[in-house]
Length: 230
Image (cartoon, rainbow, N blue to C red):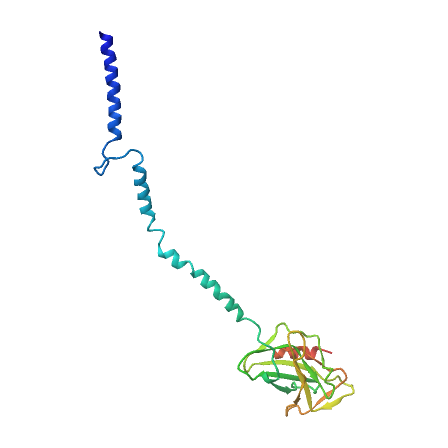
């Protein structure tokens, strides 16, 4: 009789545990409704996560700021373009003057080129200088390349010096000279034009091997080289 009662108690205990589990799975949710088990909380958390991230995605701040670096970079090439060298000077851009150096015996001539336009231009290399009818044989340079290209703005000047003769040489006298200008590739810019010498100079005496310096923005550099050359 005791064995039957013990078996009946085990059955009742097992049944009570099953009922407790069933009641736990069908307990009411926090909103007063009935939960559907493990599936219900998952959509609830997913919806909560979606609601949290939604305002971040369409935030206007990153979208507006992103193109700004691109605009800044695109402006740089135009800035670098403004640093390009000015075009080569031509006859129409320049006024040419001539003078002697003080205390010189007329053996050297200073040529001054003034930009008479409202835009900069560049004097490349050295001037093609001729005397008389020998326009196909311009003076050779004194091996004095300038350190920088001679770009001159409006009303600015560049200089070149000519060694006319050495003492004791057989010479010829001229009242004008021809001048032409070079492009970056050392080609002449048209035929030499005839330039009258200034009232100060009036005429020049030219020996057998005259020569010329490169263009330079610094007159003292031209002077230094002219009187150093032999």
